[in-house]
Length: 179
Ligand code: FEO
Image (tube, rainbow, N blue to C red; front, side):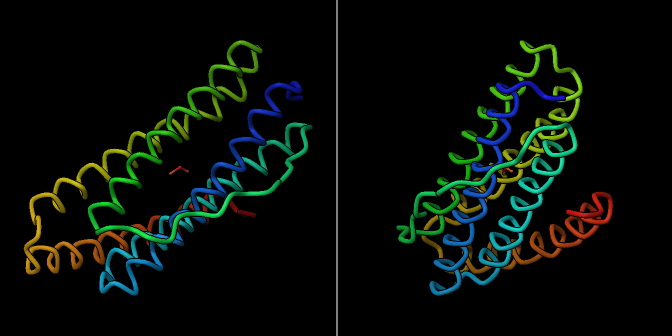
């Protein structure tokens, strides 16, 4: 059984993961209409991954005697200055999500809810990987600068990363039947 404060924290994280998914769909749409098909594919896959993160939390909370609840979400941004701007915002958002997961983890420790702390380890590892991936993408976009050829190659690279992400999402969904 989770305590009321752990339940509240997890419900807030459920909302943040859902919001992440919407933010990335909006970014993907901008990329698609601005000629970055690979970046769009990566962001759409990332949006699906965030939904898996959300559902995993919902199932966990309900399984532990809590009650997952959804609420209103603010409208995501739809306008971006450049591909660099998009991925700078992705990194900023992922850093925010990492900090929020740490906060949920910290509350679970304070409440001596070690099952939840253990469950959240998966998210902590996931965040480290996500931040690292996005930093790598940003480095390459910065290297390309204003060079159209460089950005074109980068977009191809993102298409390949998107295909890899899709494959790992399928595996993740298989491991978490019901998600
Ligand atoms: Fe589920 Fe990228 O945070």
